Amino acid sequence: MIDEQGPVRRDLLIGLLGFALGAGATFLVWRQHATAPAADNLVRQQRAPDLDVGAAQKVRDVKAKTALKPDRAAPPTAVPPSARITAPAPAPTPARATEPLPPATGVATAAVVTPATPERTSAPAVGVPSQSALPAGTAPLQISVDNLFDGTGYNGTWHQNRRAPADTQVLYRLERRNERVAVTPASALHAAAQGARSLPLAASVQESLQWQLPRLTLRFDNKSGKQVSVTALEVNVRSSYADSTALPFVPSVSGGSLEFENLGWGKVQGAELSLGFAPAQQLDTLQPAAVNATQSIKLEDFDERLRVDLRQRLPAELRATGAAVIGKLSFVTASGSQRAVAFRTLVGGRGAASRRGRPLYFHHVLLRAGQIGVTVLPLAARVAPGKALEAKLRIASDRSVRQELTLTLKGADGTVLAAQAVDLEIFIPRSEAGGIVRTPSTLRAYVQ
Image 1 (cartoon, one colour):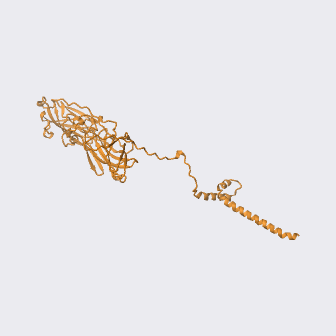
Image 2 (cartoon, one colour):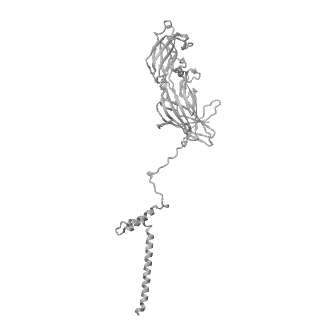
């Protein structure tokens, strides 16, 4: 009985052992596959005292492999509000105010654009670039000089006189020098200071000079096929030097003394005066070169004015009726240059001419001597295809100055529409500098 049940039990045990081995193998396979997704849990378990070194190494290997795999489904990381960079909102388009042009014969009426108050910035300036340094496709800004004495740049009756003699006018000349434009003053006074002629006959400094601040006509033609928005004119002063040239003047009526007045900003140094005399009625016909000098006087240096008493120097036969004095003032400038100015004046017999009231002089931008930087003059104009924008820019300084400028017309998004490098020389008579207003006028643009 016992012998018959032995094989049965043996088969049963073998079956149970096979089942146990299969279940154990299945459990090991399941545990191995469950290890990779649970890498973080295993890392925490490696700190437990019952985890062996081999298991800990496995955990580190599994975590390294997991970290190298790109997580394509990871959600975006939230950025705190303090670390966000917000693009600036686009500036609103300035409102335009328009008014009709003054009626003129043969001139079409155009819209006048009135921008906001000019803004001065202190951005440092660098060397003047050539036109080739501008963005590709940028056209040079068209510039011309407007010398018309039309009353827009000053007040005062003398400056309103359009029939004033040519000898009294200070005009600005424009010359193109390769990619630059040079604007310089010219007058009989400047020519006399260079020895090219004698001083003009005028009873006073004010009567000898019909001058105004330089006015530049700027023009931009829209040759594109779309409308162009113009928002600003940028005036970049890249260099500025005070003009220290001496410009002495002698009025044509001097009473009993010669009244020298320096209209320039440099000292008259080492001055020597040569004098000749003739009857008063010959004042208008005599030329300084035709009269022999009979007296020579050493003068002291002077900045603005110097009076020389001639009552005891006149010939005896001319003291009662007055004398025409033909003279030459030789001097040295602050730079060491030798200069000689010829003049004619009436001494004795009449009193000196009275001085007129000083006019005020207006401008759109005041560029002080010796200061560099950028001035932005706002504009608000839309130029249709085939149309042109024109603005008349009047520039002032606090004294005579030589400056290198870059004038740049900019669009709504800050793009450069047109630009031009300018060498500008401004003449400000020393005696008239106080008449320049400090508050600039609004620059207007005309679309036509």
